[in-house]
Structure formats: C-alpha cells, structure tokens
Image 1 (tube, rainbow, N blue to C red):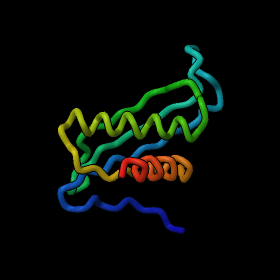
Image 2 (cartoon, rainbow, N blue to C red):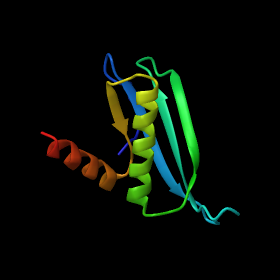
Image 3 (cartoon, helix red, strand yellow):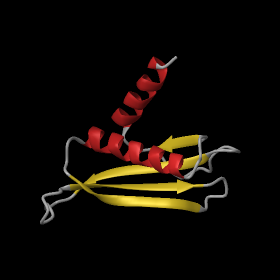
Length: 102
C-alpha cells in the first residue's frame, strides 16, 4: 500500500498526528513523543506542535496527539477539520466516539 499525503477537502484544514517511542528515555523520564502538523487547503503549514511525553500506550499517545491537534485547530479558530494518523486503533476509537455522539 502506497502512503501519500492528500490535500483536505475545500473549507477544511488537515491535522496530521503521529506518536512515537524513543529507544532511550530522556533525562526527564519521557520515553515517547508526539508530532502534529496543521495544514490549510493548499498544504501550507498553519501550525506545528511537538514534544515528549511519558509513554502510556501507543494508542493512548496517538489519542493524546489527536487531542493536541484538535486543540490547535480550535486555537486557530478552525472548526472544519480532517484528522489523519497511521494508528488504526486510535482511528477506530475516534470513529466509535464520534458515532456515540449521534
């Protein structure tokens, strides 16, 4: 399967998130990290966030990254958001949560 970034739909921004685990913990004890990029319709970066966190589980870390990305979109006053992650478990949990709101 070929992976490639796709532009968001008209009127949306795209929030790409990724969580990762470090081979060696940092001096502060953090052993994983997150990275988030918000892009507009043209692919221009609006905002980027990154940092280290304590490893819970990869799914929990990815969900944390999703939360940071959504908060960033809120701060930028963007309410039409496409979320993108490569963690299938986090995507399923996010989709299940959205369905529970209906």
